[in-house]
Length: 92
Image (spheres, rainbow, N blue to C red):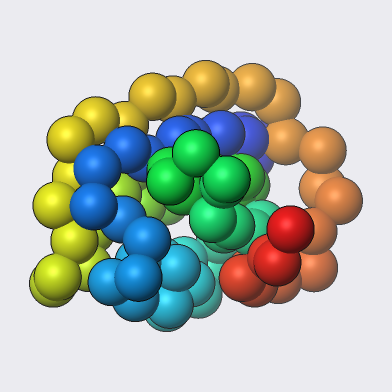
């Protein structure tokens, strides 16, 4: 049974290829959803997959891309909606 993870990552996470690395990791894990920069300097991730897949993505989000410095990750878990076909960078 799939779940949904919504996470907000704070720190030095914009301008350091964070979205690219997140998209690559999510695709490797076969997770669906999106990642986007927020106007406050954070990065938001909405992802759906198995609990195990999402736990692995969450571990990655705490590390981030090589040039990133993650200060905190807030997470919210819920039921999957099945609305996504793949994983992509979203431009808002």
